[in-house]
Structures are given as C-alpha cells and as structure tokens.
Image 1 (cartoon, rainbow, N blue to C red):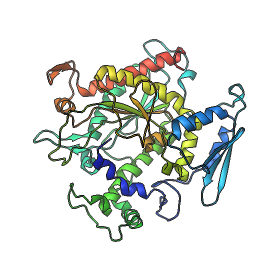
Image 2: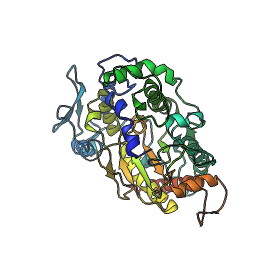
Image 3: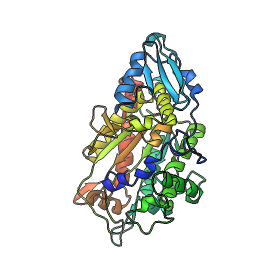
Image 4: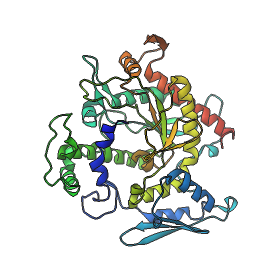
Length: 432
C-alpha cells in the first residue's frame, strides 16, 4: 500500500466513476466498480440477532465514523430501516433483538474463537482454517501494478513476490501450531481470468463520463503525468485491482471457507521514478480491519449492503482483538513504530495498541470472515531495502550493523506468534 500524494491522486478518476457502471458496463447502476447487485433478502437470516445498542455502537464507532446521509440508515427503538435502492426508494427493515440473552444465533460459515474446543498448549490453532492472501501479483505484473522499483543493478523489489515469500514461510509455521492453511494466491499469476484488454471499452466509458471526451489509448511512459487519463491505465487498474480482488473474494467465500484471512503486504512511500527511486529513512508498521466507510462509499447500494452484512456477522468482534495482539507481536519483533496516517479522512484508529486502523478496502469488505490486513516495513526505506536485498536466510546475519533475522522470517514469525497468543488466550476465555 502506498501513502504518497502521487499514489493517492492516481486513483482519482477510477474513484469518481464508482456509481456509473455495472459489471457489463451499463449505465445508471448505483454500484461500485465491477460490483454485483446486492441480495438484500440474505439479511433476513440476521433478524433479531443483534440488539439496538450493539448495532448503533458498531455503526457509530466502527463502520460509519465519517457519518452518512440520514436517509440511508434510520435506527429506531425496535428496528433499523436501511435503504436498498436509491432510485426505487426501497428499504430493508432489520428487527433488533430485545436483549443479548434473547438474541438469535448469528449465522456464519466461520468459527469464532470462543466456539473452538480446548486445544493442547502447543496446538493453539487446532481446528482453525486460515487462508493466506499475499498481496498483489508480482512477477511480470509488478510494473503494471506499480509495485516495482530498482536501485542500480540490484535485483528489483516487487511487492507481490515479497508477500508470497512471506506466505510460504508462514504456512508451515501455522500448520505446526495446528491450523489448516490454504492459499488465496500461491503464484505470480492472477486468479481472475480477465485481462486488461477485456476492460478497454469500460475504461473508455469511465474516462468519457469523468470529463475526458477523447481519451488517449496508451500511457507514454511511467512518469506520464496524464497516464490515469488513458484507456490503457484505466483498463489495467480494472484488471489487477478490481477484477482480481473480486475473484479472490469468490474463491474465499465459495471454496476455501476460512475462519480467518491474513492479507500480507509490504508498505511503501512515494519513490518517484521506479528506475531511480528515492530511498528514505521512514520505516513503520500498521494493520487494518474493515470499517471507516466514507460517505460516498455508503451511497453505493452494494457497498452499503456489504457493510451491513459484515456488521451483522460480528467479524469485527474477532478482528480487532486479533489485530491488536498480532500488532503487539509484530511491534516487539520488528521494533517498528506505528504508522500515522497524514490525514484521518479515510481511516479511523481503533484498538489499544496504536497500530490498528479501520479502513474500507475491497478485500476486507468482500471476504466473508474476519480479515487482518498486515502492512509492515516501508520497502523503499534504507533499512528495509537493505534487508530485502539480503534475501532469506536462516539464523542471524549482520545487516546495517545489526544482527537480525531475514526480513521474511521476522515477518512470518511475528504473525505466527501473534496468532498463537490470541488463540491461546481466546480459548482460555481471556479475550473479550
């Protein structure tokens, strides 16, 4: 994930087009990019599973911290009235439970920690299904994803490849602790069958709708200031960001059925020309859970539905304490400070460690189970870059004057340690 001004600006045109097109490119659907029409009847399963106070607390403190238009969600004493379709003015009514004691059981395909049976001390993850989701693609796609840079003749840094290496180290550690581990991605190839050329017409329509009447076909070069106004750039981002993540969600939700997804990423700050990147001193760590929806996002019918379904599943009840404990383990292992977002207009700090934020990302919203999204290390920091170039190795090695593990093993070990700590405590009833 990038936090530079340049990276945030480059998303502008796609972000403006969110409510314009359906998956087939037809106009007037109030959906996110490549989004599907929500099935509001699914929420009937959640009737009387949550009290009014629980619902209002999650809306105010987790999911809608930036506010929302009053016609979208009306919380009454006995129910909530939720707008399903702005054009048709149709509403879904969610009935509240009278109290926690009388609440119906929450329907879900994942197991909360408190429902897992006791485990042996050395197998705290027994009975747990964990899916590892190494971020991005890497390989030949890394330059397209803008997750690539190279310093001189050194091997290029490609986030997708780094994340996959961590996942392959983490998997056996988790299995040793008793977990059943699957991979959302285990190669540098996309999950989606689509490719950028499949989105050329949609990309053109998006650009025209957003004020580019005659969009150029191709990007001139990687530093082209107007590249986001080209059909090529738009079709590529539709492929690797939207189509790819949505297909991963289908895999997670219909085949893998995990109790937890770990999204593994490396962070970065603006590096300028990827062939002559800027290395910096900043290096930090943070984790993300789903929440903090923006007002414009809540205006979209599918995102509003997905938020309500996620809220009702109570994924957050497990995500937050889990993310807090993993963050603590990673902070101890890496000695990295917490990242501070330069503005709070997209995120909300949650938890007790200072390392965890709520944010509405496509993966954390669409995966129908708890999701913890890890963002350690700034790849183009001088320290992280030197450690990445040192590669993977056993034991300790002197890097930048300090004896330390490989950056990949440090990452994998700290996540595994955090998971083990959380599930030991949760199975003993020591986590709220």
